[in-house]
Amino acid sequence: MVLTRQFFIYYRKLDRSKSVSLALSICLLILYCEVIVYYLVILQCTWPEINRGLEGDGTIDPPDERLPLRMMLLADTHLLGPKTGNWFDKLRREWQMYRAFQTAMLIHKPDAVAFLGDIFDEGHFSDDWQFKRYMERFYDLFYVPEGTRVLTAVGNHDVGFHYRMFRHFTERFDSGFNTSSVQLTVLNGNIFVTINSMAMHGDGCNFCQEAEYRLDRLSKMMQCSQGQATTAKQCERMGNLPGYSRPILLQHFPLYRTSDASCTEPDAAPAPEKHVKFREKWECLSKAATRKLLRKLKPRVAFSGHTHHGCLVVHEDDIPEWTLPSFSWRNKNNPSFALAVFTPTNFSVNKCYLPLESTVINTYVLGTAACVVGWYIVFLWYIVFFFSHAAKS
Picture 1: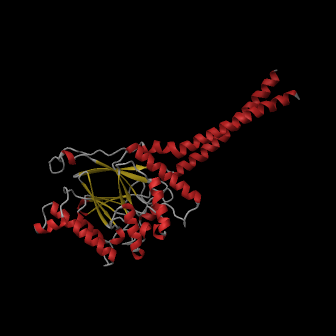
Picture 2 (picture 1 turned 45 degrees about the vertical axis):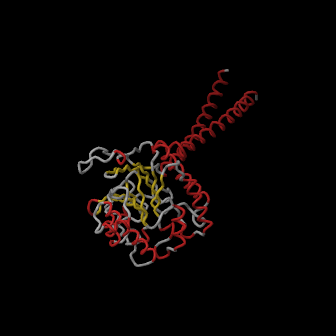
Picture 3 (picture 1 turned 180 degrees about the horizontal axis):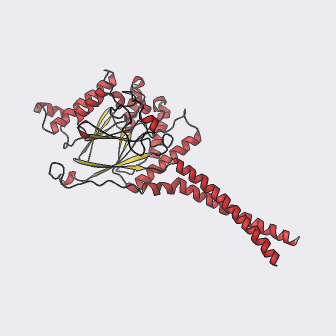
């Protein structure tokens, strides 16, 4: 009777200790899966190296233009709206993107960040109040330090596909992000051109006419900066750029390609999806729009999103295009982003991969099981130890 009473006294003490230790173990597991793992994975990615000495033509850039611009690029964040996703789905995805983005900003400290469209999942269905809330959430999740430039391309989920792209939707997006259908931005001597992909249909609609006008004007400005204009008077009207360098093209839709069949990136589309044919103006730009952009802008590199999968393709005149996957784990088990370094005549790109959601889930399951099993093993060991000690007594 005395032995039984002593056992239960020690058992209650052990049970309290076990409960505290188990709760502490679960908290540490959550801390690892929700914070620490992002640091461990993102720290493995570094800025690419770039040759800032002699360039391709054997000349040396002026000192003020040789300062490299470090840019982080991501696509398809798809912030959920009021119609899709439950509260937990929204909370979970936004925390993942917030933690990944802010960890990358803290570690890599880019000079500029580019968002390649589909920032919102329901921008094309949102009224003005909902869109205002969307903007507030965007700046809460993806805030950047003062002095960091933000470039934004519009996506079809932000304002709608071409057939339902209303003027009011494009104007509020352009106003919120200080952009336009064809936007020129010069950073450290590097020319960035941000395109509204849905305005590249070339069917004579108001959006298309405005975009084509801006594109033609920008093309002539670049010609003037290279001394290739037909008349000096034309350049006086257009104005000159501070200095010419082949532009970097940023847009939501990829340039024309038949499918993802040639994509070999680790975050490329799964095998069954790779061979699905792309529809022009839906999964990618049309052949005509692609030719027009390449001919008028002559970009040295292009970046896009939209497909939710990663891809690297090389277009005519050896122009590489990186299509970045969705930054949201709702759309991709293995999201990623890009780190790019630019000078006016050179560039280099690294892909940075984020924690696999399947790995995080497995860590939760195995970690929780290990905690529970571990403490039951401790409990069984205590019973054996107690009774063996009592028997000797």
